[in-house]
Length: 167
Image 1 (cartoon, rainbow, N blue to C red):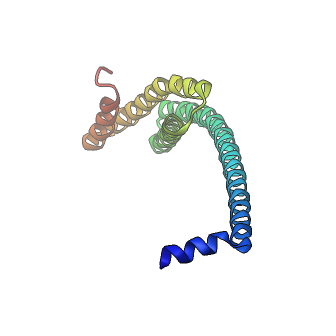
Image 2: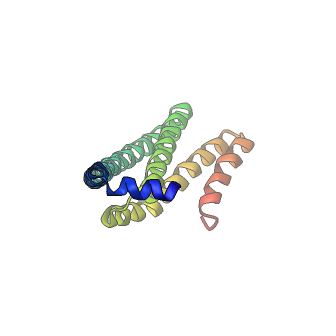
Image 3: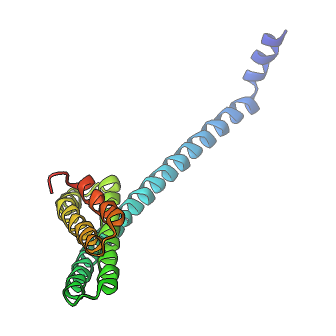
């Protein structure tokens, strides 16, 4: 009886009209969904582009941090030469903090960027930053050894050795 009822209903003009409307509605929904997907892809691409721009700006921060770290390290050397150990300690610790921050930004860029040029530039900075970190740790270790605080000296020298065991 169910089949007979459906067969009779399929022959009615309203059923044919309903099928036509349903097909038109389905096509319209499909077009809307395709357009939304297109818009979403464009938005994601735009965000990815902005993400790369932000990473490029962060790389410029790395360059600034390196320069500030070098300056702080030089200030530490000057203070140590003038036997102002507390001033030297603060300058070396500032330099180490700047180099570590720069190293973290480089690691973020290497982890997230898709820009080949940016990745290459960041990768080139890794050995330089590691070298500067070793210098900073070594300076702090040496400073503490002069002060006969050998535990503190070993702490800093071991950090340098962890980066470059051949230093």
